[in-house]
Image (cartoon, rainbow, N blue to C red; front, side, top):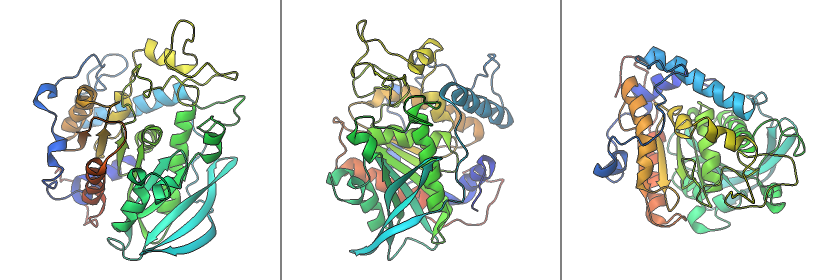
Length: 381
């Protein structure tokens, strides 16, 4: 179970992990509003090969999926090797309420260690337990030592999940925010993709724990963390599901949907462009304008999730009109024989609230908290 490939994950999704009806409390979010049902906007269908050939079968999709993944890695830079057998240092352990909090350190790039928090509940939902990686500007907020509406790790641990909270503390303090490999002077991988790589390494920290079920690990983050969680889950298929809180799930010129910034997909050597919306006097640089010129958008990455479930916890940056992008992944899931794998809930503000967070927690409880049953590879529920 420690080395699940994409095909096996799909079988598990189809037959065991996500059995049963979606709870009524969150079921409506898996259906687009009437206004946006079937609307696909101007996005190029991910069901078209690069040469324009139509994807017609599940076998075709596996080839097309590989093509999309290779194209994006070719553009963003290829990852170093993921640490599938991580060495984790436990720096400190302390009891908090009904869980144990471990301060841990591990390599999240080939040359850099990070310090985060591993929270292990006294009474997990099952043995082995489901788990979730949480990502943000720093790891303290998610464990309940910051904004209480961004304390995803703490709240999920209280619900019986093992959680691992990580963040880019030092880079955030330096206003560089992201990860730069092998160096900030000469970065070979776009920083947002490198954050996805760090999330993959965090996955294996959890997967290597005897108390964690490696087939039931998700990822969640808000805003900057939402972008991070999206790239981590889309680019690394071992994450069973994901929740992205208002990251901006398509390219846009809104100030907070700022993929052009050098710490996301617009890396260029310093001095960096002035922060803000691109203009004639302050143009975008790096890979981002090339992606726009090629007609690419993030819906291609979303499609890599299929048939793994994901939830967009949309705020001001991800309004209901984003269903135009999400409908493309719904089409991929239909081709594969799956339904109710894509969800979006909306709120007016960028910041999460109690209602939106409860939807996130119920999403993970439904899709991760049920113990697996024997795999039936003919089942397509």
